[in-house]
Image (cartoon, rainbow, N blue to C red; front, side, top):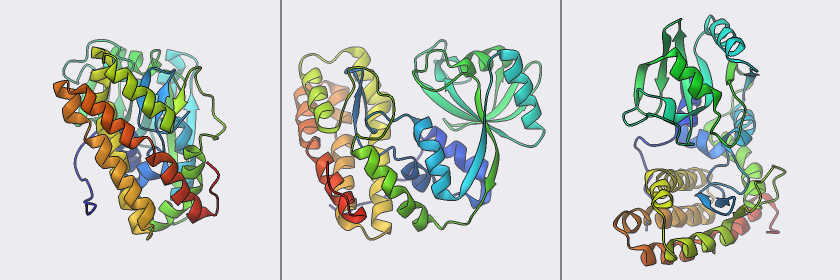
Length: 314
């Protein structure tokens, strides 16, 4: 099947937030997401929670490498208290918008249906703050949204997010060198290969498995009786973002004439996207069969990317 780039809205909160902060000189969100290495692997976090992103990966783990590949830098600020965080945010806003996150999405009450923590991370661009609340661009689809200050600070505390630190923000985004988009893609390949190898030096929660093993275990979990929580996580987030990331990875790899790797990534995107319907309607055996087709594609992608970089030991 010919690869068709996917263009639409979707859960790309940090890529879209970065694009807003970088302004007219920003790469496309396709290239930004690729640069974070998010498409390159699959993990079953703690042995129970699936994400179509690399073993041991978190968004924060990919940010600095992504900015470096794009030719940008930023300053990271983390606060120990609500009062200090608010003071730092007000000070930073005097120089322009501020990139904030992770925050707990469930406390963002401007989003319909959000009335408490759901252990979902999110990223925002804050435009202004006063004693009543904040105004922000929320890349979930809410430009110039407002939120009461207490709700924002509770979300920013990120107590129910399993990575990162409370009250984290990025400021002082500076372009230190000009990198064309194809150069961003090429510069990101070594990090992609490290993540796909599952040897990247990051903390991994106990019980977490990756790539082939994670995919096979998820297939068995679904066959054995897919819980409502697992099904909801897959159909509302993990499948959507996983398929899109890989579709974008295929687009990026094709741009730098890596047809074999692009074809494998496109195949992965097709398989993950194909999970949506059977999971929604309860055809769990069908979903499990799709996952078992997906499992062997990870070493194939690694071998293809290893050929590009001269490394091929999985």
